Length: 240
Ligand SMILES: C[S@@+](CC[C@H](N)C(=O)[O-])C[C@H]1O[C@@H](n2cnc3c(N)ncnc32)[C@H](O)[C@@H]1O
Ligand SMILES: *[C@@H]1O[C@H](CO)[C@@H](O)[C@H](O)[C@H]1NC(C)=O
Ligand SMILES: *[C@@H]1O[C@H](CO)[C@@H](O)[C@H](O)[C@H]1NC(C)=O
Image (cartoon, rainbow, N blue to C red; front, side, top):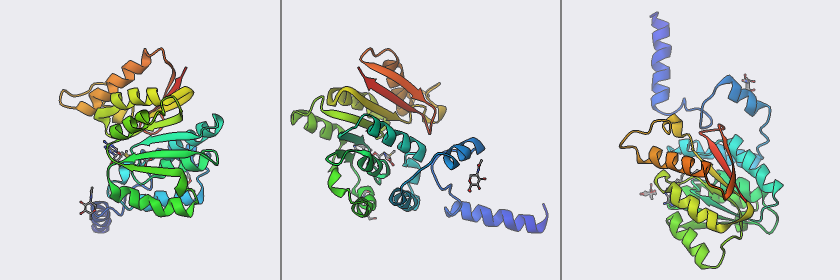
Protein backbone atom coordinates (compact mmCIF):
# COMPACT_ATOMS: atom_id res chain seq x y z
CA UNK A 1 0.00 0.00 0.00
CA UNK A 2 1.33 3.48 -0.88
CA UNK A 3 2.25 5.56 2.22
CA UNK A 4 -0.36 8.27 1.52
CA UNK A 5 -3.05 5.59 1.12
CA UNK A 6 -1.97 4.11 4.43
CA UNK A 7 -2.42 7.51 6.08
CA UNK A 8 -5.93 7.89 4.63
CA UNK A 9 -6.79 4.37 5.75
CA UNK A 10 -5.56 5.06 9.29
CA UNK A 11 -7.51 8.34 9.55
CA UNK A 12 -10.71 6.63 8.33
CA UNK A 13 -10.20 3.78 10.77
CA UNK A 14 -9.78 6.30 13.60
CA UNK A 15 -12.89 8.24 12.54
CA UNK A 16 -14.91 5.02 12.32
CA UNK A 17 -13.75 4.01 15.80
CA UNK A 18 -14.67 7.38 17.29
CA UNK A 19 -18.04 7.36 15.60
CA UNK A 20 -17.42 10.21 13.14
CA UNK A 21 -18.03 7.96 10.12
CA UNK A 22 -21.46 6.76 11.19
CA UNK A 23 -24.13 6.66 8.53
CA UNK A 24 -26.54 9.59 8.77
CA UNK A 25 -29.50 7.27 9.19
CA UNK A 26 -30.01 3.76 10.38
CA UNK A 27 -30.11 1.05 7.77
CA UNK A 28 -28.38 0.18 4.53
CA UNK A 29 -27.16 2.90 2.19
CA UNK A 30 -27.63 1.19 -1.17
CA UNK A 31 -28.13 3.32 -4.31
CA UNK A 32 -31.74 2.07 -4.46
CA UNK A 33 -32.45 3.24 -0.92
CA UNK A 34 -30.72 6.57 -1.64
CA UNK A 35 -32.88 6.97 -4.71
CA UNK A 36 -36.05 6.16 -2.77
CA UNK A 37 -35.19 8.66 -0.04
CA UNK A 38 -34.00 11.34 -2.45
CA UNK A 39 -37.25 11.14 -4.36
CA UNK A 40 -39.85 10.61 -1.66
CA UNK A 41 -38.87 11.97 1.74
CA UNK A 42 -40.81 15.00 2.93
CA UNK A 43 -39.44 15.12 6.46
CA UNK A 44 -40.72 18.16 8.39
CA UNK A 45 -37.77 20.35 9.59
CA UNK A 46 -38.45 19.65 13.29
CA UNK A 47 -38.34 15.88 12.65
CA UNK A 48 -35.09 16.26 10.75
CA UNK A 49 -33.66 18.16 13.72
CA UNK A 50 -34.68 15.40 16.14
CA UNK A 51 -33.25 12.74 13.80
CA UNK A 52 -29.89 14.53 13.58
CA UNK A 53 -29.88 15.03 17.38
CA UNK A 54 -30.65 11.31 17.87
CA UNK A 55 -27.73 10.34 15.60
CA UNK A 56 -25.44 11.82 18.30
CA UNK A 57 -26.67 9.17 20.76
CA UNK A 58 -24.59 5.96 20.93
CA UNK A 59 -27.78 3.88 20.48
CA UNK A 60 -28.87 5.77 17.37
CA UNK A 61 -29.12 2.47 15.46
CA UNK A 62 -32.51 1.94 17.20
CA UNK A 63 -34.01 4.90 15.34
CA UNK A 64 -36.94 3.95 13.10
CA UNK A 65 -36.03 4.48 9.44
CA UNK A 66 -37.55 7.65 8.11
CA UNK A 67 -39.27 6.00 5.11
CA UNK A 68 -41.15 3.76 7.56
CA UNK A 69 -42.05 6.73 9.69
CA UNK A 70 -43.39 8.65 6.70
CA UNK A 71 -45.45 5.62 5.59
CA UNK A 72 -46.99 5.33 9.06
CA UNK A 73 -47.80 9.06 9.14
CA UNK A 74 -49.56 8.66 5.79
CA UNK A 75 -51.56 5.67 7.09
CA UNK A 76 -52.53 7.67 10.18
CA UNK A 77 -53.83 10.49 7.98
CA UNK A 78 -55.60 8.03 5.66
CA UNK A 79 -57.63 6.45 8.47
CA UNK A 80 -58.05 9.83 10.25
CA UNK A 81 -56.55 8.36 13.41
CA UNK A 82 -57.09 10.08 16.75
CA UNK A 83 -55.55 7.66 19.22
CA UNK A 84 -52.19 5.97 18.74
CA UNK A 85 -49.75 3.98 20.85
CA UNK A 86 -46.00 3.64 20.38
CA UNK A 87 -44.45 0.65 22.15
CA UNK A 88 -40.78 1.65 22.46
CA UNK A 89 -40.43 5.40 21.96
CA UNK A 90 -36.63 5.86 22.24
CA UNK A 91 -36.03 9.60 21.49
CA UNK A 92 -39.50 9.98 19.99
CA UNK A 93 -38.75 10.35 16.29
CA UNK A 94 -41.75 8.27 15.24
CA UNK A 95 -43.90 9.43 18.18
CA UNK A 96 -43.41 13.04 17.07
CA UNK A 97 -44.21 12.11 13.47
CA UNK A 98 -47.41 10.39 14.60
CA UNK A 99 -48.39 13.37 16.76
CA UNK A 100 -47.97 15.69 13.76
CA UNK A 101 -50.08 13.38 11.57
CA UNK A 102 -52.90 12.77 14.08
CA UNK A 103 -55.99 14.95 14.08
CA UNK A 104 -55.94 18.14 16.22
CA UNK A 105 -57.49 16.40 19.25
CA UNK A 106 -55.33 13.29 18.77
CA UNK A 107 -53.07 11.66 21.34
CA UNK A 108 -50.07 9.33 21.29
CA UNK A 109 -49.43 7.11 24.31
CA UNK A 110 -45.65 6.66 24.16
CA UNK A 111 -44.21 3.70 26.11
CA UNK A 112 -40.57 3.86 27.19
CA UNK A 113 -38.50 2.70 30.18
CA UNK A 114 -35.43 4.93 29.78
CA UNK A 115 -35.95 8.58 30.73
CA UNK A 116 -32.60 9.56 29.22
CA UNK A 117 -34.08 8.82 25.81
CA UNK A 118 -37.41 10.60 26.31
CA UNK A 119 -35.51 13.67 27.58
CA UNK A 120 -33.73 13.93 24.22
CA UNK A 121 -37.08 14.16 22.40
CA UNK A 122 -39.10 16.42 24.70
CA UNK A 123 -37.66 19.80 23.58
CA UNK A 124 -38.52 18.90 19.98
CA UNK A 125 -42.10 17.99 20.94
CA UNK A 126 -42.41 21.47 22.44
CA UNK A 127 -40.78 23.13 19.44
CA UNK A 128 -43.30 21.36 17.18
CA UNK A 129 -46.15 22.51 19.45
CA UNK A 130 -47.43 18.97 20.02
CA UNK A 131 -46.04 18.13 23.48
CA UNK A 132 -49.60 18.01 24.86
CA UNK A 133 -50.41 15.32 22.25
CA UNK A 134 -47.65 12.96 23.46
CA UNK A 135 -48.41 11.13 26.71
CA UNK A 136 -45.11 9.55 27.81
CA UNK A 137 -45.51 6.56 30.14
CA UNK A 138 -42.18 5.71 31.80
CA UNK A 139 -42.67 2.10 32.81
CA UNK A 140 -42.61 -1.31 31.10
CA UNK A 141 -44.90 -1.16 28.08
CA UNK A 142 -46.89 -4.27 29.08
CA UNK A 143 -47.88 -2.44 32.28
CA UNK A 144 -49.00 0.60 30.29
CA UNK A 145 -51.07 -1.53 27.89
CA UNK A 146 -52.72 -3.23 30.88
CA UNK A 147 -53.39 0.21 32.42
CA UNK A 148 -55.13 1.33 29.21
CA UNK A 149 -57.26 -1.83 29.15
CA UNK A 150 -58.10 -1.39 32.85
CA UNK A 151 -59.16 2.21 32.08
CA UNK A 152 -61.80 0.81 29.69
CA UNK A 153 -59.97 1.81 26.50
CA UNK A 154 -60.28 -1.55 24.72
CA UNK A 155 -61.04 -1.21 20.98
CA UNK A 156 -60.62 2.59 21.05
CA UNK A 157 -57.17 2.94 19.45
CA UNK A 158 -56.66 3.54 15.74
CA UNK A 159 -52.95 2.82 15.37
CA UNK A 160 -50.25 0.96 17.30
CA UNK A 161 -46.54 0.81 16.46
CA UNK A 162 -44.71 -2.12 18.10
CA UNK A 163 -40.97 -1.42 18.35
CA UNK A 164 -39.68 -2.32 21.86
CA UNK A 165 -37.94 -5.42 23.30
CA UNK A 166 -38.36 -8.26 20.81
CA UNK A 167 -38.87 -11.05 23.35
CA UNK A 168 -42.26 -9.50 24.23
CA UNK A 169 -43.45 -9.09 20.63
CA UNK A 170 -46.17 -11.76 20.82
CA UNK A 171 -47.48 -10.24 24.08
CA UNK A 172 -47.42 -6.73 22.61
CA UNK A 173 -49.35 -7.91 19.58
CA UNK A 174 -52.08 -9.61 21.62
CA UNK A 175 -52.53 -6.58 23.91
CA UNK A 176 -52.57 -4.31 20.86
CA UNK A 177 -55.28 -6.44 19.25
CA UNK A 178 -57.41 -5.80 22.33
CA UNK A 179 -56.79 -2.05 22.24
CA UNK A 180 -57.26 -1.44 18.50
CA UNK A 181 -60.68 -0.88 16.94
CA UNK A 182 -61.95 -2.67 13.83
CA UNK A 183 -60.35 -0.90 10.85
CA UNK A 184 -57.37 0.10 12.98
CA UNK A 185 -53.77 -0.76 12.16
CA UNK A 186 -51.00 -2.49 14.09
CA UNK A 187 -47.52 -1.87 12.62
CA UNK A 188 -44.65 -4.10 13.74
CA UNK A 189 -41.02 -3.09 13.20
CA UNK A 190 -37.94 -5.30 12.68
CA UNK A 191 -39.95 -8.30 11.46
CA UNK A 192 -36.92 -9.42 9.39
CA UNK A 193 -34.39 -8.77 12.21
CA UNK A 194 -31.45 -8.48 9.83
CA UNK A 195 -32.49 -11.76 8.14
CA UNK A 196 -31.98 -13.79 11.32
CA UNK A 197 -35.67 -14.81 11.36
CA UNK A 198 -35.02 -17.16 8.43
CA UNK A 199 -33.03 -19.56 10.61
CA UNK A 200 -33.06 -18.37 14.24
CA UNK A 201 -30.16 -19.67 16.33
CA UNK A 202 -31.05 -21.89 19.30
CA UNK A 203 -30.00 -19.25 21.85
CA UNK A 204 -31.51 -16.29 19.95
CA UNK A 205 -34.77 -15.60 21.75
CA UNK A 206 -35.45 -12.34 19.87
CA UNK A 207 -35.25 -13.93 16.41
CA UNK A 208 -37.33 -16.88 17.59
CA UNK A 209 -40.06 -14.65 19.02
CA UNK A 210 -40.22 -12.44 15.91
CA UNK A 211 -40.40 -15.52 13.68
CA UNK A 212 -43.12 -16.96 15.89
CA UNK A 213 -45.12 -13.72 15.61
CA UNK A 214 -44.63 -13.59 11.82
CA UNK A 215 -45.99 -17.13 11.44
CA UNK A 216 -48.84 -16.43 13.86
CA UNK A 217 -49.93 -13.33 11.91
CA UNK A 218 -49.81 -15.22 8.61
CA UNK A 219 -52.71 -17.42 9.77
CA UNK A 220 -54.50 -14.87 11.98
CA UNK A 221 -58.05 -14.48 10.59
CA UNK A 222 -58.70 -11.35 12.66
CA UNK A 223 -56.51 -9.27 10.34
CA UNK A 224 -55.59 -8.44 6.75
CA UNK A 225 -51.84 -8.51 6.36
CA UNK A 226 -48.86 -7.01 4.53
CA UNK A 227 -45.20 -7.65 5.29
CA UNK A 228 -42.98 -4.98 3.75
CA UNK A 229 -39.21 -5.08 3.23
CA UNK A 230 -38.83 -1.38 4.05
CA UNK A 231 -36.18 -0.76 6.73
CA UNK A 232 -35.59 -3.91 8.78
CA UNK A 233 -39.02 -5.23 7.75
CA UNK A 234 -42.37 -3.66 8.64
CA UNK A 235 -45.56 -5.68 9.04
CA UNK A 236 -48.93 -3.97 8.74
CA UNK A 237 -51.87 -5.77 10.34
CA UNK A 238 -55.27 -4.29 9.48
CA UNK A 239 -57.88 -5.35 12.04
CA UNK A 240 -61.01 -6.72 10.41
C1 LIG B 1 -35.98 0.35 18.65
S1 LIG B 1 -36.16 1.48 19.96
C2 LIG B 1 -37.59 2.42 19.50
C3 LIG B 1 -37.36 3.39 18.35
C4 LIG B 1 -38.48 4.35 18.15
N1 LIG B 1 -39.74 3.69 17.88
C5 LIG B 1 -38.18 5.36 17.04
O1 LIG B 1 -39.07 5.69 16.26
O2 LIG B 1 -37.06 5.85 16.90
C6 LIG B 1 -36.77 0.46 21.30
C7 LIG B 1 -37.03 1.20 22.60
O3 LIG B 1 -37.80 0.36 23.46
C8 LIG B 1 -37.43 0.62 24.78
N2 LIG B 1 -37.85 -0.51 25.60
C9 LIG B 1 -37.20 -1.69 25.80
N3 LIG B 1 -37.92 -2.49 26.59
C10 LIG B 1 -39.05 -1.80 26.92
C11 LIG B 1 -40.18 -2.11 27.73
N4 LIG B 1 -40.31 -3.27 28.36
N5 LIG B 1 -41.15 -1.17 27.83
C12 LIG B 1 -41.04 0.01 27.18
N6 LIG B 1 -40.00 0.34 26.41
C13 LIG B 1 -39.00 -0.55 26.29
C14 LIG B 1 -35.93 0.85 24.71
O4 LIG B 1 -35.48 1.61 25.82
C15 LIG B 1 -35.77 1.57 23.37
O5 LIG B 1 -35.74 2.96 23.56
C1 LIG C 1 -29.10 11.13 -3.38
O1 LIG C 1 -28.83 12.46 -2.99
C2 LIG C 1 -27.52 12.64 -2.50
C3 LIG C 1 -27.44 14.08 -1.97
O2 LIG C 1 -27.92 14.99 -2.90
C4 LIG C 1 -26.50 12.37 -3.61
O3 LIG C 1 -25.19 12.51 -3.12
C5 LIG C 1 -26.70 10.94 -4.09
O4 LIG C 1 -25.87 10.68 -5.19
C6 LIG C 1 -28.13 10.69 -4.49
N1 LIG C 1 -28.28 9.28 -4.79
C7 LIG C 1 -29.11 8.81 -5.71
C8 LIG C 1 -29.00 7.34 -6.03
O5 LIG C 1 -29.94 9.48 -6.29
C1 LIG D 1 -29.16 7.99 32.36
O1 LIG D 1 -27.98 8.79 32.29
C2 LIG D 1 -27.31 8.90 33.52
C3 LIG D 1 -26.21 9.90 33.34
O2 LIG D 1 -25.43 9.61 32.19
C4 LIG D 1 -26.82 7.50 33.94
O3 LIG D 1 -26.14 7.57 35.18
C5 LIG D 1 -28.03 6.59 34.07
O4 LIG D 1 -27.60 5.26 34.36
C6 LIG D 1 -28.83 6.58 32.77
N1 LIG D 1 -30.08 5.84 32.99
C7 LIG D 1 -30.45 4.82 32.22
C8 LIG D 1 -31.75 4.19 32.57
O5 LIG D 1 -29.78 4.39 31.30
